[in-house]
Image: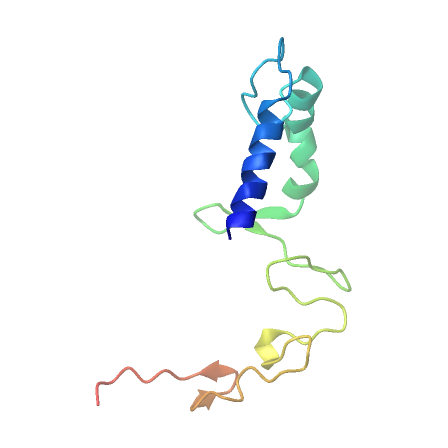
Length: 117
């Protein structure tokens, strides 16, 4: 433990010995150049692809993600990928039966008994 502390102190001394004359202090750990700002700027053009995946539905005009059509692959968020069985079937990609240990189930749903004993 003492040797680790000595190594850390030696590192601090080495960092302190670096000449920083004329170097501005770091304000943020992000690219603050004009090119960096342009790259991180969010515009309607950069969102166009994602906005096309949405639709307005219902009387309240809520925005919802469109359902995948045909053989389209869905991305993250627990959606079904090629060859996977979804959680609605009680399985994961490894073939584990998620509902096997449930004490009581009805169809694909687990029954939770909240009555006090």
